[in-house]
Image (cartoon, rainbow, N blue to C red; front, top):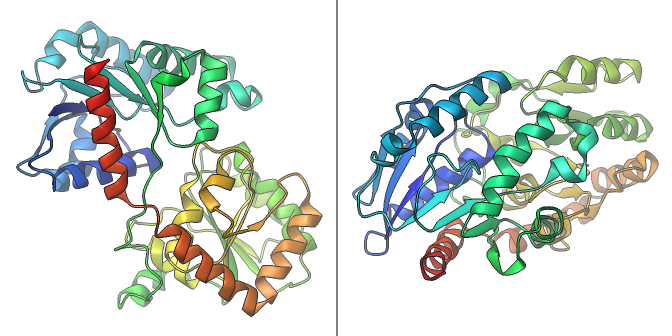
Amino acid sequence: MSLLTQGADQFTGTATYVRELLLEFGQRTGDVRVHGLCNRHALANFNGCASPAVKLTAAKYPMGDSRATRALAVTAARLTARRLARQFADDACVVHYPLTLDVPSVRLPTVLTLHDVLHHDLPQHFSSAGRLWRRICYDAPARRATLVHTVSMFSKARIVDRLGVDADRVVVIPHGVDHLRFKPEPDNRDEALLESFDLPDRFLFYPATLWAHKNHLKLLDALKLVEDQELHLVLCGAPVGRLREILAAAEQRGLAQRVCHLGFVADAALPAVYRRATALAFPSVYEGFGTPPLEAMAAGCPVASTLVGPLAEVCGGAAIELMPDDPRQMAEAIDLIAGDLQLRARLRAAGLEHAATFSWARTADAHLDAYTRARGV
């Protein structure tokens, strides 16, 4: 089997999904041949995925770093679709668009990955231009695809309801966890990796892009109410123009000395931060999947999370619940998890057992089944 993948110009959670999928396919030389078509930035990120079973090619089209320039890049790519299509193997039989946008368009069976329909469910978090962009680049491609892949039963239900895609055309394949990286045993590199961060002795960790739906402000409200005044909050994730606002909000609440943002945290250092944290706090009000709770569990970090949307599926009873609109309840839950050593031990054990059921090998196997199904549609 041969298929086409695309790449992103920055390494995000979705790009991690592509990388892990390519690495797994590289070990299945008898099952699949992959020709990945990606832009030049993604090619550099994914180069370590190349193998006898995985070939990567840079697409020769312009890239953008804003909505306007990305729109121009997409237009240019669509105008040169035939040339782009010739860049992957002539015997391709299935095309997978793991980053949703279906460029180049092809006359072959397609599987398109769509993580969520956030722009429909929480439209207030988008400008009119942002909603239009997603309708063009998310909704329309999903309706055209042979099969739509999503990552949770929650997202499947929302895709069917909001986009009108037939339920039989939507397959649910959860993401996996890299258990070689996210493990409870400290790595001998942990201290060196964490040295530059100057972490507090006891802290909640929240790795998330600073989008409004990630609910940072309500978490700050909760932290102000927490009885344990020595407990800190450590953030990381893309600022998306909101870091100054969030740090100012922390200062207004008298939390300036207890809240910090680590900036960029390399993949190699992230498991070490989980292992050092007192607990993960995940107060998000909307997710398509929600990988950080699983990563934390695999690394032996107790988890306090909202259970909205797919997070009940993801956490599987191995987390203490946060009510996303109730800072006082969140504060009580945080005090409980931070102050009860036995509770943290129970959550740690339950989390390790639950996270073990998620693997990239299982995710890759399910993708191969989806490709086979797409060919037969």
